[in-house]
Image (tube, rainbow over all chains, first blue to last red; front, side):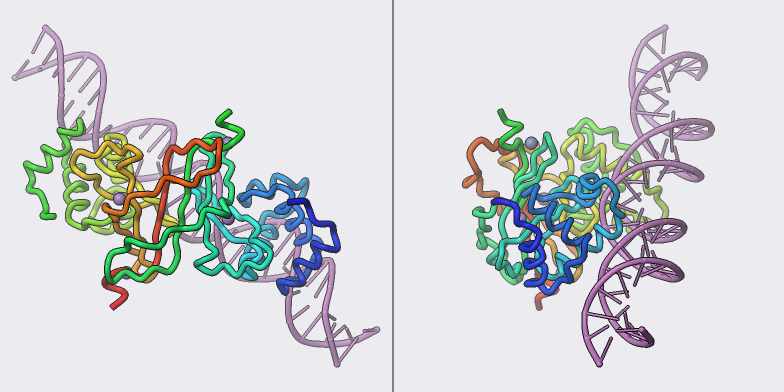
Length: 141
Length: 141
DNA sequence: TGTACTTTGCAACCCGGTTGCAGTTCTTGT
DNA sequence: ACAAGAACTGCAACCGGGTTGCAAAGTACA
Ligand SMILES: [Mn+2]
Ligand SMILES: [Mn+2]
Ligand SMILES: [Zn+2]
Ligand SMILES: [Zn+2]
């Protein structure tokens, strides 16, 4: 995936009904660039000077408008990753994530969809969260 | 599962090489009684007077000796549940958990073992965490 | 251009988890 | 039975991720 240019970024926000402010464009650009799931802290560290709360609220807004989804990978901090272009964050769009125990990176396994079966009677399934953990591509070499 | 009596509880701790102190016996008894995954806060609330840190360290000790396993269910607090009698917490003993979005309860799905396939090349799998979310038995009625 | 609404930055707070330390209890060797 | 050492406990304080309140700055739109 190549990184979209400024006008494209703006278009992406607009298409999600998010006002394209300067900060939000930067956040979106960064999320596109890294192409993995990042925590609020990691995001903050990737800018010279940015207010943590503003980043937090940008991500919150993005998530509300289904531009990003969040992953609890067990590292202690929530991570955020860009959704696919036309994602509506429905159950069938859920996918697994891989968390590297060594470098702490977390990736979307977009093709690893979740098995929905074997649930006990009378339990109603609404969502699932599957995190695979181990060594990533780079760390297993 | 019925709740073990005092001497049995003591035996359980001893068999895991954990010194059976008064507090630890109480914690083990409570974990047996509730028969689900509980958070540190919930555990604390189930005693009239107990120090949070002592409970915390009891759970930590239990986990080290593989008497309990912990579950990150996305509720914001780690939960702990008793392991099966001869559990060694190996990958093949991993199971899924169910978290109720309404009552916040979390259960072990001991028979729901995890599918291990479809991982990208060069990724080394060490552990998995699968949490199903929805409405539990009681809440779906 | 004026006004209402949104976004931003800062400070402060919340809460789960964790550590330091001193006092107590328990284990072990004599 | 006793002393020395190790393990456990309770309290206070800290830490870090996440969150909120509020006033200032920015933006949309009539
Ligand atoms: Mn993802
Ligand atoms: Mn379990
Ligand atoms: Zn890695
Ligand atoms: Zn429930």
